Structures are given as C-alpha cells and as structure tokens.
Image 1 (cartoon, helix red, strand yellow):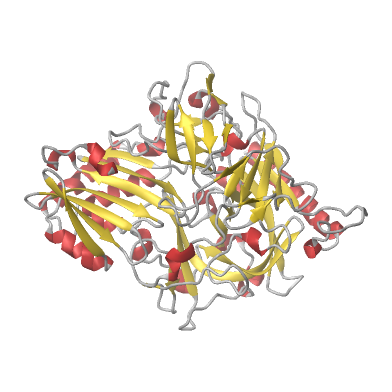
Image 2 (image 1 turned 180 degrees about the vertical axis):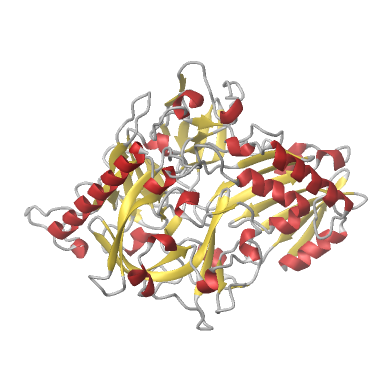
Length: 158
Length: 440
C-alpha cells in the first residue's frame, strides 16, 4: 500500500499536470465541457442515453459489448464526474485526460511488498476509485470543486 | 541473499520431485479411476502441490528486491503441441481463482520451446494478441497453443498467453494501456513466472469478447507484423478447437468441473512458506469429494456484476459484491472502527491486538457459512521476512471519501489457510450441484 502515496517529487509533477489539464482539457471529459462527451461517444462508438438529476445531467454511454460509462455534467456542461462498469476498463486516458497519470503513479508498485489491489486516490483535486477483478471492473473519478449544489457522492452509486 | 539462494534450491528440488512424479505416475490423462466398478486401487494423479513462499528467486535480487506475500504457486509443464520431448517445467506460477486462463512470461520460456509454440491466428490469418486486465494492472502478449500439463492432468493444444512477447507484440496497443494500471510484462512485475487462472467461468472473456470493435482494454487483437491495433471478436468455445483462453480445468478429460484448494492453517506469527494441495475436479475422484462443505452458489456470467460473486454479511450489513479469490493476498474490506496502519503500511489494518471478526458468506442459493477469521497487525506481520501472513487486511477506501467499495468484501488467500475451498465452474455439475459455486 505504500504505492498509494506518491513521492513528493511525483506529487509536484502531478499537480503540474493537473493545472495543465484545467488550462487545456483537450479530449479529457473530466473537467471538460459537454462537447467532450460527444467526442467520447464517437471515440467509443457508444449509444448515449441522458437522464436528469436535480442540478446535473447523467450521460450513460453503453458500448456494443455492454460496458457502461456514465458522465455527470453540470447544467453549464462542465463534466465533474465519470463512472464505469463492465468486463474491461474504459479508455481512462481519454476519460481522465491529464489526471490519467495520477492513476498510473498510484498503480505502480513500490516498497518491499507488492500488492495488487483496488485504488483509492485523492490527488490534484480529483478523487478516484478503481476496483473489481479480472472480468468485472468498475470505478469512479470525481472533481468535488466542480460539483454543483444538489449533488452528493452517493449519486455516483446510482 | 542467503534466503534467495535457499529458495532457489528448494524450487529446483520441487521441480525435480514433480518431474519424477509425472514419470512414475504412468500417463497423466488416463483419468480412469472415476468410473471403475471394480475396487482395483488406482493411483490418483488429479492433484499437484501448492507452495506459498517468497516467489521466484529473481524477485529478491537487486536494490528493489522484494519477497512475495500470501501468493500461492504451482508448477506446470508446457510442451510443443504433439511433442513429448520439447517441453519445459515452470515453477512459481501463481494460482488464481480470481481470473481465468494460463499466462506465462516470454522471458521464462526457453528458445527451443518458444519457437515451436504456434500462434493462434484470426480470420485475416494474422496472429492473435490479448490484453487481459487486473484490478490495478494488465498483461499483454500473444496467444499461442501448447500441450499443458499439471500434476497428472493434461490439456492438448491449449491456448494460453505469452505475456511480454516480442515481434508484433512488442508494443502494447494504446487501447490496452489506456485502461490504466501497471504493465505486467516481467516476472518481477507480477511476482511469478506466470498466472494460472482457474476461476468461475469456462473462458476468459465469454460473450463480451465475441463482439468486434468497441474500445477500452478489451481484449483480443489482430496482430499483423506492423503491430496490434484492431480489436477482434473471438468465440468462447468450450471444446477444442478453442479460441478464447479457456479455464485450463475445462480441458481436462475427467476432472473438468472445478477444483479444490487445500492449505493447512498458518501460525499466528506467520511463517516463511506453506505447502498444500490443488485437486482437479469436484466429486470426480475419491480425493475431491465435497464431504461436509457447504455449497454457496455464486453469480453467473449474465449477472450485472459478472460471475463469481457472493454476498458477505459483515457487522449486520449485506455486501453483495464480495468474492473469494486466491489471487488476492489479503482481506479487503471497509471497517472504519478498526485501527488503520500509518506510514509505510497506510491502508492496512493495524489492530493493537488480534481481532476476531465474524463475516459470513451467503450464496445466491441462500445457503451461508461462517468465514470467521482473526485479523492481525499488518505492520508487525509485514516487517518480518514471512511470506505467509494470516489475518492480513486492508481498507481499500482509506484515501478518499468516495466510499467506492461499500458492497464488497474480498476474501483473499489468507481465507484459504486451514480450509478446503471448492471452486466449481459455471454450468458444470460438480458433486451434485451446478456451478458456479464456492464451497468450504
């Protein structure tokens, strides 16, 4: 579990990456606009179904093979959370953009004991968990600072 | 260093013993003991030794050397299809009921054998590649076939993954690495020479991988010499010729409905190694009968969560996404009332004194059984050189507020210590009940 704690050097690098992301979201859906949801849908060749929360919209993208990604957007279109569930993980490089490297760092084994384990990351303003096991994976990434009033973490489980 | 050298010698001894056993046993695949109406004793060969130890000696080498913890290893033999001489025995292959399929690192295979292991090919006559995901990592490589044997069991022309292969497979496709996690491309990165997945399903991907296209870390690729990029569908055939990687057990002639992992109890203080037995089949021989074990049916492939899940009942809460997994090295569950470790062991549980916990496990058939265990202080256990550490637990939620694992209790290898744990494969009748189920 020491791998859950990035070294201070990588932490600085990651914060830098996160700032860069906020400045230029590119494809990244997390922290990006709803236009990036369209990009994701095309990238994944997915069917999209939108449902309304009190202060946000949930865009559920379902792939031909049944995997589901849900993207949570504010009324102004800013995507503040994504969740995934299915037999394989989604393209997290696309979904997380600059935050992806934080996941990579946290996944890397360090120390005298190696453990394969689910991840729980709090980094650069993003909270992420990624769990499951071979054949079924799920997880969520969330930017609390961008979440609208009326949203609670429990909505990610819905 | 002394430790590594000693373990190396032990491994060689173990491999020699197994080879001798194979030669003396007189033909692994006869499997004829199950249906005989006469009482002529037949030497059973449907089993092999399990060792829980520090892992391949290469792990301990160098400045970043480490020892494995709570990993169950077995020894396998691979032969070129149809050959009885171009073979290699491979020790320290991790035994994993949480995945399906055999995966071996290319670096482990000798050149003569490797060159004689044919690639599986797709409808474009190109080699097939595979990206297989784990909770925090993935393995990528070619799909080849070999004659596989373990104990006295043999599966001819079985597809398996050569992880970290070269040529067209040298570059991991971005659609594989984009699922995140560590690229398990070496013995040191996995902590084993390979992985033997004998979990709940008959193939490693099922209907999901019969669909071409899509995105993400799915799973089978068309691999022309220019490299792997296109995702292809592969049939989930349960009889030869196979396409997807199979659960090696379904290819066995008789003992093909599941397995039994039998490990002795470990002392509270832990120990450096532990030896037990893996039996193939359930209720197919005199050594793999269910006995008094309670059958707990697990979810199947058409379940929302996929196959192999049970419900744990812990502190009055029902946790429906729970599972028993020999490939997890500890108990993973959320209990904020237990003292967490700090510093290097953050995330683990560090109770001041041994803590008796009493989860029960419930099957989808409504049956339940006690999974009680004693939780020990992880910082104390992991500060030793022990590779067998009972009662090791961690909280996967410790570092953020998402509460991502409210419904999950992972019973890892320590759960197996002191138990016989049966894993029956989906759709297979085993000991009078139909899989998928676990029993203990």
